[in-house]
Length: 78
Image (cartoon, rainbow, N blue to C red; front, side, top):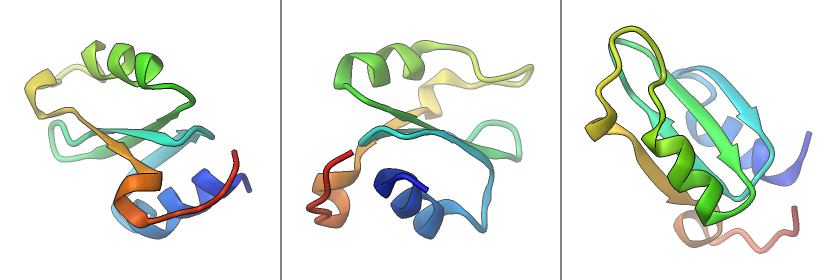
């Protein structure tokens, strides 16, 4: 498991329906009654993922981006 994937799994693994990707920037999609997490390599990728619809009952205003390095003090290289 990639280092960022391990951090995301630790933080959201019990509540997320799925966690995909391996980047430092986690895009959380808490739409409908399900949380999904997409890990992106760059802030630009994360911004694009945040803007995308995540499903049939998507509420894009609820999508957020979390920099795993800043949020969890992780000092790891992806």
